[in-house]
Structures are given as structure tokens and as C-alpha cells.
Image (cartoon, rainbow, N blue to C red; front, side, top):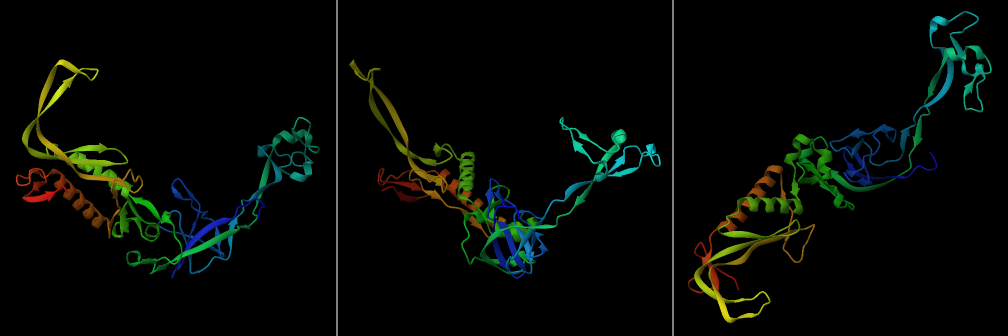
Length: 340
């Protein structure tokens, strides 16, 4: 072990088949994978479906970690660059490294003390020396237990017995749906769509925002706030037309000597029918949009589809002022919706 070697920080889950092991260190793209060449408890690690996690078969705890040391090169002998120059007793085919008694002169040039006249005919050959294994210092936290066999990923459930932070959720499929990190460890990619998954609030926010703008009936509603951090849709309410009269003022805000007026006919008014912010942004008191979940990718797709279609139907359904209450409520499909 070299004096400057850092202690490896690991996290692990226990299973009936062995230990799932990963580094606690994270970077821009998630967990930083540990060295796949590590020898743990005298065994090689087995890759999983997740690049950052490895399986240590059959063991329930880690007692030692080692890694191969890069072989060293040591000078061995000199050999003729052109073997046809070999002359018995005068120009040997090979010369042992120690025999030339080499040294560096004041110009940092390598020179021979012996066989000086033929030095330029030779090239140095090296021997690689394997130094074996080097001990790796480590600390490990056992954070949970997998209930089920890694050979049956669709039947496997997770029982978390320790603290496991929010970094267990990692982007996995199509850049928007997230799975438990353990799901991506255990489940082959071609089966991952059958596991429970989540569309996080921020991605769901962006999807709703885009869908509403693409499908809104602008005769019935309009988007009044359209930002990365908040979104508002206001409903256009059909009114019995009435006229309002207002004075026209000068540029300085004062009345003309003979007051001037303009008339405007009012046919609609607006009420907020939908607004949201994401869990990431939580902007200024706007209703926070929650994550949406599914028992599989298809179930999640169905849930999102129903949500979007229902929302747009609500936004686009015509609404008018109630003739009975004269502005105290509105009629939506013959149902009076109070605004008080």
C-alpha cells in the first residue's frame, strides 16, 4: 500500500446470491464505477446490468480488497538491431545489460564503458516484473437487503434496512423515466420496462407544458404564464356582451379641455383553470406538481396519457356565464361551478 492511497468508500446490498457493491463517490453522470480489476475476498467481481455496481458471489461481507500492480520494466540485455551483423567473437548477438557498464555523461547521453565501438549496433531489451497484488484500504456500509434471487429480476423486491439517499434514483430509460437504481442493477435492459418506474416532477412539468400548448383551443383558453419554473392557463368565459366607457387622457395623464371618451364591448372574462410549478422549482406559491408513477413503463404511459387528455379536455370545454346568478358562477356542461 502506498502512503498516498485514499480509502475506498463503498456501499453494499446483501442478497441470497452475494453482495452488490458500488462506490459511494458520485460525479456528473452518477456513481463513479470502481475498478473492475479489484480482487475482493480473493475473488473477481462480476458485472451487473448497471455499470457502477458489481456482484461478489456467495459472500455476505467484504474482508479484503486488492488490486494488481502494474508490472515494472527492468533492462535485461542488448541485442543487435540487424542480426546479420553477428560475427563470432567480435560482434555478439546479445550483450548482458550489466556487461556494458553504462553511464550518463555530462550531456545526459548514455554511454558504454565496455564494447564502446559497437554500441550503436544494439538496442536495449527489457523484462517485465510482476509485483503481484496491492492491498486497497476501504470502508463499507451495508445499506439494505434484496429479497429474492438475482436470477429472477421481475419477481425481486427490495427491503431497505439502512439509510439509502435520494441518489438511488438514476436516469435509465429514454432520459425521462427513472427506475430505482437497484432495478437497473438486477434487471436486464430489455426487461426494465416491466419494472416500476417514475416520471419525475420536472420532466412531467415539461411534458404537460408542451402538450397543453400543442393542444389548447385558443378560443376557449390561453396560456398566461409560460416559463421553465411556472405555468398558468386561464379560461375564457363567454359573457352576455356589455359596454364599458373610459376617458381618453393626454400623454401626460391629464384630461383634454373637452373630455374625450372611448367605448369597449366586453364579451369574455378570464379565470385561472390550471397552474403548476415543479418540485424542483417550487415557485412563488404555485401548486407543486408531484411525480407520476407506474407499475411498468406501459402503466406509466397510460397514467400520463389519461392525465394529459383529461387536463386538455377540461381546458378546452366551453364555459359561459350562468344566467341565473349573473356572474356568481359559470355553466360547464350544464353544471354550475361556483367561483366564490
